[in-house]
Amino acid sequence: MVSHSPPSSEAVEWYPIRQLLGYPGHEFALITLNQPIRDHDLFRDLWSSAKTTIAADGGANEIYELSKEAPPEDGDSSPELCEPFKGLGAIIGDLDSLTDAARSYFSRSRIIRDPDQYSTDFAKAVGLARRESPGRDIVCMGGLGGRVDQGLSQVHHLYLFQKSPTYADGRMYLVSGDSLSFVLKGGKRHRIRVREPSLEIGASFRRVSGDPFAKYVGIIPVGEPAVVSTQGLEWDVQDWSTAFGKRMSTSNHVLPDTQVVEVQTDKDVLFTIALKQVSNT
Image (cartoon, rainbow, N blue to C red; front, side):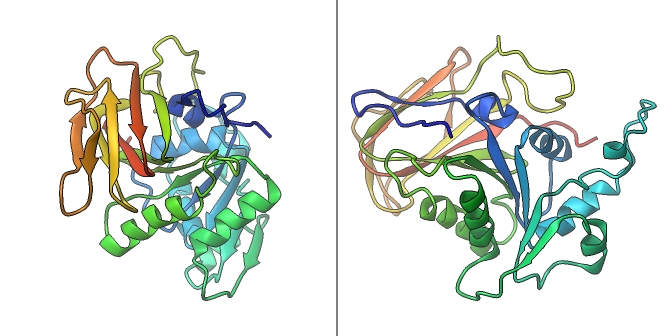
């Protein structure tokens, strides 16, 4: 288990690119939610980096649909290409969404029925990941598009499972085809490396690079009003009050030469940064 918790006098360091690559010290469990997988290559990159893979109920259907895509025409007939994603570690939930086709395809995976109606499939998947790999970071493949209630539920779960002020339980990230989002804990200065051009990246990665993010950034006070200060953005702020129904920092821009964005906040806020858009081939 790798500790991310610095002394209180130090900044909290974030390496989201290394996280997506599963670099040493940034190993993660990949949870696939019951949302369309919009960025296929990004999902394949995350799958290849993940230490463990879990589908939250109908998330297995989405992986199964992606598995039916024709493999690359490179002459490689390895089992992973012929039957991609067969190594899915577990499917968990009340299983009311799991199709017969997906259940059959993932017959070698653990299929765990948890009928608890007071817990979501997302929560059950996070619980499984944390029981089996305490302290390991979690990357959730989902999305904030589509139904508003589902998108808000996903943000709720980021807050719900990121209670420790020192990230002692591991960090959680929500990835969609458009953005990467995570919670910045209050009372701390956060340094987020948004570009790492010299990072060594294997040739097998199609989507993740040393510069995968677009310019758009949001800092959202989801739980309560916050006071934030920033460095590295086009419209930096200092001791700036932000709250729903008042002022919020959305659609700010990372400057072209910025490699580290700094955020100081007195309360928990959601940090979200856009991913560069590419054609889904």
